[in-house]
Length: 355
Image (cartoon, rainbow, N blue to C red; front, top):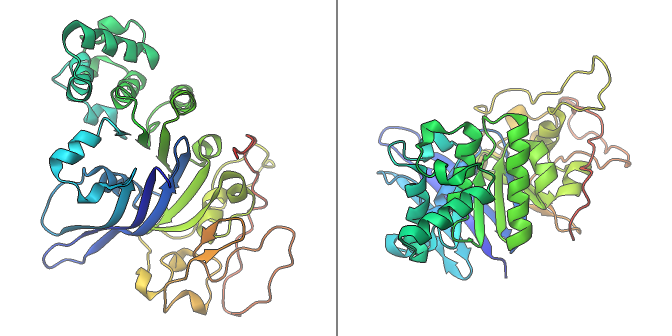
């Protein structure tokens, strides 16, 4: 059984006199112990809302509805009361938030924010908690940790604040860690250091990691399994190397084609996805990506695409998927359909895939 099993998770926001927003619409995925699973997509695709729903951190407001299941080690997190959820959150399941400056309390020293986790979940107090907090800061690469414990978030650099958040998240050695865009607004050197730190945590402690990102470079270097989200639904799920080598959904092809490549010829242009993320068809009326898709046909609208499962365990939602490289193109089924974008073959990640 998977450590975390998310089944048909849905999050809707309804306001009087306004259209109901389906931020998450039937998302399902699983995470095994020691596995790194990616949630990938543009801003507004439902990645962060999915993680906040799992953690029970969505702000309570009229019109909010959360459905489905998020089963962690046999316990449905969505059915817990606040007290039971707080006992699990931070101890067994922890989260690294996207913006450390707004996630850390600006008027409380870093040390007190770290020791609060140790006191709440591990019963540590006084000098023992201070020593453990300093050890955590040292472990995540913050120099002079004893002095940093007395400083406030604004006195730390962006990279140090992100490391402090990671220290708080791993203080109780959680079995599941959710990282929501952990390298946003950091320079490439600090990004590489943060990602290497997360790799070490997974490797050394066997922690399962859910990596939420729009950076396909992060996905290529970190994730074992990748879930591509669009308009609140998972449109493709695959292991890392097959996804990069043979994407089976046009949205995945578009994401990969819009990434600059080191092996691109001089003057070669990127192939951005046409349209805007706001150009979305309601899922009950067909494929939400159809307004922006270069492979759309008549069957793309009228009914939502069924989930297609392949022999190698991957899945996708598309009635006219991109051809697998090396196979002849299928006969045209719609003379009026636009030609598919041809961004060339997508290089697979260099890292060897884990079994």
